[in-house]
Image 1 (cartoon, one colour):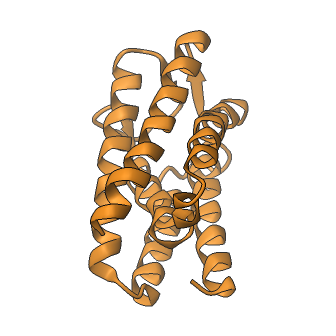
Image 2 (spheres, helix red, strand yellow):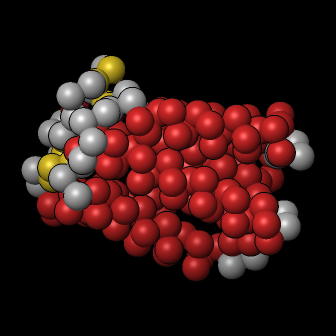
Length: 170
């Protein structure tokens, strides 16, 4: 992927994350993140070299992520401070997970040669992102110790799954 492609993907994902986090809590528009994310995903798919590969990766990352978040909310580890919920999660959560999966398509591939660093960074940065969401009042963490343990385990396992299964199959 070109440097411009990496910049576009990272920027698109970050704008989607920010739109999801701020659209509801700051602007009282829970669908704002959905709009930004859908635009980003359409642009990403338009410029994507291997659409089938990306769609496989997107579903293999997004579905477990969405289920994990659903279980965490169901078991009251944390809750989203949202007014527009579908099931147990905000309306924008599927779009956020799909947007996040763009990072796995061509950017995080470099961790294949340094797997341990990728796994450790995933176990650190994944939970840190959720904790940042709490500081922005997007989520409320009810059990910080269980939250940290489950988050670190999940994010490490997600990266192991990506590096050892997804990359080898696509």
